[in-house]
Image (cartoon, rainbow, N blue to C red; front, side, top):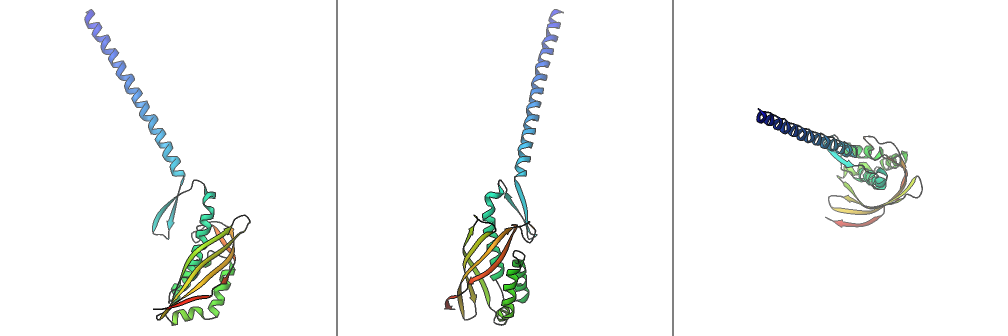
Length: 206
C-alpha cells in the first residue's frame, strides 16, 4: 500500500514537472511570437509602397525622408528634362511627354513649350521624322537657400535620317516643395525655368 502511494506521488510529481515545462515552453513561444510580430510591424512602418505607372509595385525604405530629399530633387529635375526633350515624330507622343513634364513645373515651362510650338519646332520634328533625345550630365542644387536654386547640364541629340546634331543644354530654375501626387511623386515644383544655352556642338553624318 505504501509502495502504491509512493508511486502515485511520484506520478503526480512527474505530471507537475511536465505541466510546468509545457507551460514554460508555451510562454516562451507566445513571447517570441509577440516579439516577432512587433519587429515585423516596425519593419512594415519603415516601408513605402509606390505604384509605378499602374504596372509594377516598387518598395522604398523611408528611414529618414530628409536624408533623401536632394536625391529626390535631382530625380525630379532629371525626369522633367527627359520628358520635355525626349520627342518622337508623332504628335500624340510629343503632347503626352510634354504634358508629363508640365505636371512637374509651373507656367514658365508651358511658356517655353508654347514658344517652341509657335516657332514650328514640333511640326518640323513630325514632318522630317526627327527623334530628339537628352542626356543629363549633372544637376547642381544650391540647398542653402529656399526656393532651391538649380542648374542642369546635359546634351540633346537631334537624330535625322542623314545626320545627328548634338547640342549643349544648360537650364536653370527654382525648386519648391509641394504635395506629392500620382503625376508628381517627388513633391517638387519647378519655377522660373528657362534654357540658358542650347547651342550646337557638332553634327555627325550617319
